[in-house]
Amino acid sequence: PVHHRIMPDRIEAGTFAIGATTTGGDVRLVGLRPEHIELPLQKLEEAGAEVRRYSDSVEVSMTGRPRAIDLVTLPYPGFPTDLQHPMMVLLAQAQGSSLLTENVFEARFVFVDELSRMGSTIKVEGHHAVIRGVESLSGAPVEAPDIRAGAALVLAGLCARGRTEVFDKGHIRRGYEDFDRKLRLLGADIEVSTV
Image 1 (cartoon, helix red, strand yellow):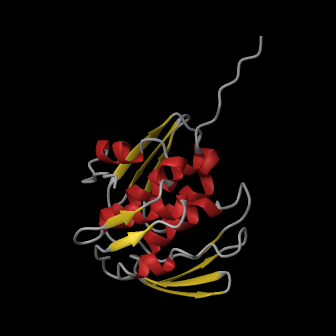
Image 2 (cartoon, rainbow, N blue to C red; image 1 turned 90 degrees about the vertical axis):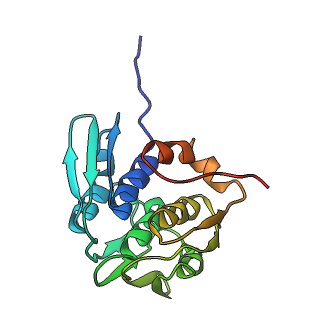
Image 3 (cartoon, rainbow, N blue to C red; image 1 turned 180 degrees about the vertical axis):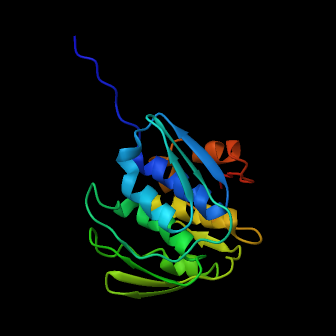
């Protein structure tokens, strides 16, 4: 007989790791191999997060404001394009200016306008985004254009001052199982309503 275990979703794990860093919190991700998200973990460390790797788990914590870093998306094992959105939320609050280069997909910065409604300072030039960090984001009504941007806007709302409403047409639930419940378990003040 052959025994096989399906690997955990590295994008979901990376989203929660970046989320802990973005909100100044901590998280322990169990059941994953750290090497599957090694480059994102290295980038979080570069931004100031403390990362502890174990054989089947990772702990990520952050205190204080993140440092600005540069980031380039590439196919695996490079930095995943699907983690570019939450990383942009982190960098929008970093000390200094960051350069994010998207090398995998065209038109991947469509959610920048939504993040700008929350007070971010981001200038898109082709497949580059120059992000000047601000002290903090402000709550605002925003719309999720896709799965990854939707999750990133939720993370932005969690660390923003004031109330944020993320209008989503079902994108987030397609990419993140029980996202709101998992965030509540981590201490998030979040509710989902259907219209």
